[in-house]
Image (cartoon, rainbow, N blue to C red):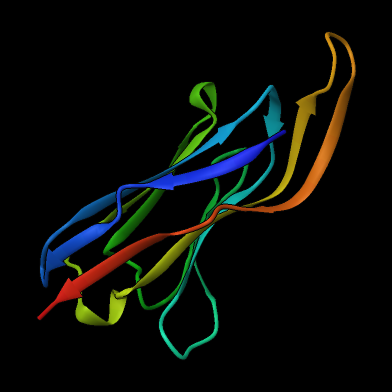
Length: 126
């Protein structure tokens, strides 16, 4: 079975940096677009950044110039480099992909859509 597993969250002071990673596990053939979302307490989940299979990126206005999304297709991993962190960046960060193609046998593949990780907590202290 395929999964997305986030790591790299933690506690950091305002102005600091963190790098989040999200690895897809399982017998992966390909991954389409990937993205990072976040949800702060009492708020709706919001888009942070996305990256397509051809490495086109988009960012929420609130993180432009501070966060950078990237991916390593050989490792089936997407990253989020977060610099100049602010207390308002505090949230649970979730990884998502809209489609994963994975092997169910040596020659057969299936698609799994809208896959989410379990999230990683990022806390920025003032």
